Length: 261
Image 1 (spheres, rainbow, N blue to C red):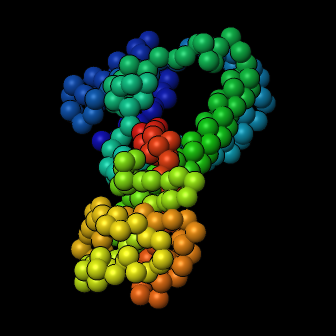
Image 2: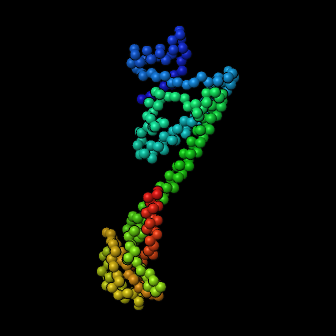
Image 3: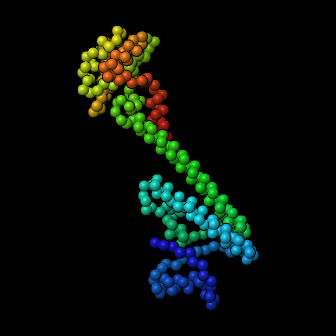
């Protein structure tokens, strides 16, 4: 569907609108004709009109670029390449068919130059607002992607926040729980040997917390003075000790951040 704005003089005492509607809509049936009502402006001199006409020709391209950018971003974000956004909360054809001049924004009592200046100021603000919103959207999208990335992947890389429960973690002045990622094919070996990987590992403290297709996450409690010895022994046997300490605030903060974004 195409819309044309036609400016035509009245002839023979009959309005151009009535003439065009009678011929194009009623007789030929090739178009629907609607009035496009604008107020009587303060026209000014012929010289001022000629100068304004040149200015509007330059502004027309700039306005078209901003509108195209708005439309492109709207379609990209909605993931609907053919969608036409609403204008003032109504569909575009209805808006055009019932167009009313906004006196509050653009007073018809102002000169045409003043109205032109007000329009371009609004276009500039719209363009600046679009840039700010796109920047905010990009940052938010990156933050959400970062959170999702931390919560995806295998147990070697994904965040342990939300996986490890408070009751599964111990840290006192002398003892601490470590979290070890063991390959699934090598889990039995780890469970049978972890107590001998350092001198002060708490016997029978190992607990398999979760697993995926490739790895298992195991908690082990030991005395802090032998932690480095235990970590070195794990590395030598290709078991990975995750650098993680449970903090209840981290779980709540992660959930709140994701919900906020």
